[in-house]
Image: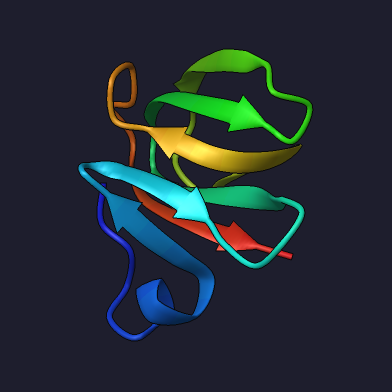
Amino acid sequence: FQAEDGIRDDISCLVGSEMCIRDRSGAVLYVGTGGAVAVETIGGDDVIFTNVANGTFIYVECKKVKATGTGASGILAIW
């Protein structure tokens, strides 16, 4: 996945190939190009959302988008 230029510095940080939501308790996600999205929730649960459609919001507070299990792209963290 890729964050848009300029947005990555404000809302997330890349650790290896995972996106961590920093300086926040969590964020909902926007998925530009669909597929599976693997996340860690603010409660510490690992969840994989499968068959996420293009242009979908995931209304679960997430603190990490995991590279393993994520096939979607254009993912933005929003709060």
